[in-house]
Image (cartoon, rainbow over the protein chains, first blue to last red):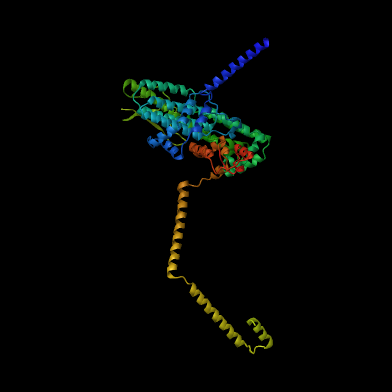
Length: 392
Length: 161
């Protein structure tokens, strides 16, 4: 009697568990990991090279929206939907084995960028239909996507920022063409503030490079750096480096690790300086190992493994500066929506020009206004200005 | 009796009454050379091409030469357009070709591309790594599939991700 009762109880438990597991599988969309959906989006993404070129031209403002692009967007609707769904998921684990350091195989970054461009083309289509809310929503999805792409590694950081910048360029266009709508501007401002709470950190990229390089500098891993040609250093240096690596022992490994740590320490200190000083110092530090290696074997592995921190740092500042200008511009558009005219001076407390660390230079013109940088992008030898048109 | 046997019999039975001398030898040789020269002249005259034939031949040569010039020019233009006129040949191409797709997608390899040509170079390298190359063989052994997953494209004789 008791056995029969136990059997019944066990059956009920099994059935309940099975029901719970199966129902959770049925309704488990979107999954708790955005990366799964991004990978699926890549899987469904289809575009011929000619069409990809056309998309890039559209994104750069070289061409206008046309029927071919509309067709491409329509054909890739599934990929776009997956990416948008993914952008709404907080958790994103790409499944990368970062323990391999600089030998970690990265994701198809070019496809991510194309996918973002495709979503932004869809935003243009929405704007053409007059649905500015949906268009802005798509741009915000791309900004969230950019933050998911930015994941530890320097290249992910650079691509994440590039995608983010592209989304902000589209928001800049939408602000110029959409009807004056204070409510929508406030909503946009709040959405961006929420997205910006997850920032792009250059320091975390330095930490990642640091961990990856130290791994290669352990005595047993040093020979794994050969063949030396893989590191694309000048041939005169590669011969010296090869000689030292072939003769590597524990003392060589320890000396190289100490040299690297000193340099990384100096690089981290440089990141706290204002842009101009930081860039000059990073450039000096990045060139140092190549000069030192001739006399100092301890500089060997740093010469091979040091990323171009100066370039990526500048690319990072460039990538963050347009978003700052867009956020400042939204405040100016809001003043216009409230008062009916553009302010005579730049309101205080707005995001600053990262090249100078000062507020943007604000100038009104016939079409709207311009936010001009006060500092120069030293890697490109260029001063940027961002133009914002106002709908008449 | 056949003529060959007649001659043999003649030589055996009666010696020919011919008196040889230096003058006689010279005259015989001169006659022979003269006859040979005449024969050659006649033959070459027979083989001489007609005016029409010469004309057709020269037209064919001209056409062939023109075709060769067109092919070479087209080839050169294609190479220059592909590389970009006035651009220096990319010295890094060799290392890129040697690398397998997986090697091209390592953090360090992409970082090197970034150093060379910024984000565009990284994009291009990523695109190359994921672009299927070469023909797909009909059959792949288990070892070949494993080698491919490990990024050793050389063992399979093709590069495909």
